[in-house]
Amino acid sequence: MPVELSSSAQRVQQVLHQMGYSYEVVELPVSARTAIEAADAIGCQVGQILKSLVFKTKRSSTPILVLASGDNRVNEKRIEVLIAEPLGKANAEFVRQQTGFAIGGVAPVGHIKQITTFIDQDLLQYEEIWAAAGTPNAVFKLLANSLVPMTGGQVVQIT
Image (cartoon, rainbow, N blue to C red):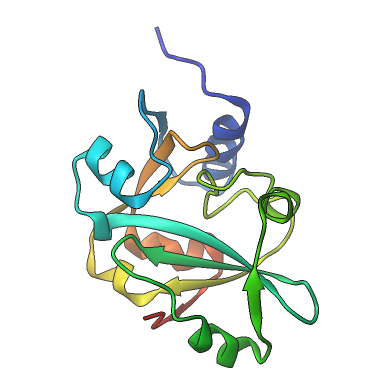
């Protein structure tokens, strides 16, 4: 008997299917809030974990989503050059207001608002990657070459 997904994970699953993808969301019995936790739970390399990081621009309070390889740290200065505005930290309330997801569970799709998205070029070295799917323990496996068409994001060097 299939296990019913939580509402946030179900929303991601519905969006994936509406977009024409057959990727399946699963909820792990352990937390996948961090890239290391996710890689340990899944049994993959940390670099194959897609970290969804939400930033807030300092002047216009615009959300910026960076989809980064689990191995990488975002060089915020590189993103600031691309958007021509300084970045600031996004708190948990801002992340939820912009995406509909809690920190640690932000999926690359299914946000409640349109978000400018940048994709770490290092993710594209892998055939398969894993992304959060709405909760800190929900994930889905996808082909890395699906990221650009799926998100409309721009591939950049983030490190």
